[in-house]
Image 1: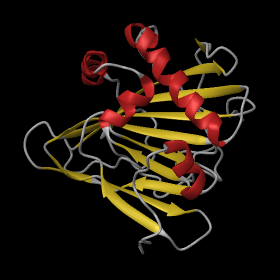
Image 2: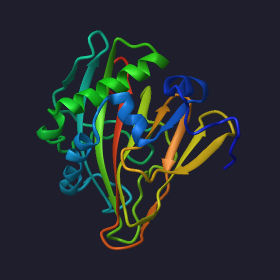
Image 3: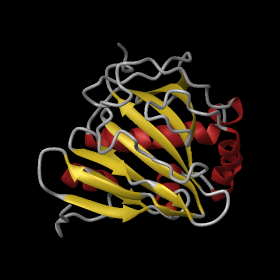
Image 4: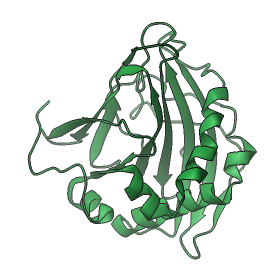
Length: 245
């Protein structure tokens, strides 16, 4: 993969950086500044990743992923966020050749998180930021809690490989990185030669992506100690409705 010195990981104005190059990386303090959420509030959510149910839909035969999934709607006028009725996660094969074309019904995100005012504040703040890049009156948001572990020796954060999600914007937020090697994040131009690689290693840092302009992946992880795992929160923002068959 080539890298290009005209790309930068961060920028003083995240929305402007996304508009310029298709992605931006936020340090934990930058994410907190954008959302107005205190560190204690974020840490309050972290134990929920210890009780995620196993992902029963992995088509590569792996047992390394656990997750929960819920949907929300953000109204730009007033910034209100409401939880949508629970529904299956679906992607077309064009965007996910491994798991596309099937309705995957995961357990919902626990009420203690989904009903937390700071959770709604996080979703609304990122929605407002993305609306500065591409105007939208309403965002349809899918939230995914992931734990990738190494109980079988290796874990794959993105078993489908470098991909787009079929949405407008994606936020990948690191929750924890515990005793692992690997897990390098990679971002590529969707229709060009440029690419960049980096490791997310600070909890509550994030990478924000324009899904139409870039593809992304994270490389496999291997254990570097006991109970090795990588926890993330992935939020996707889409105009026009949730993806469905």
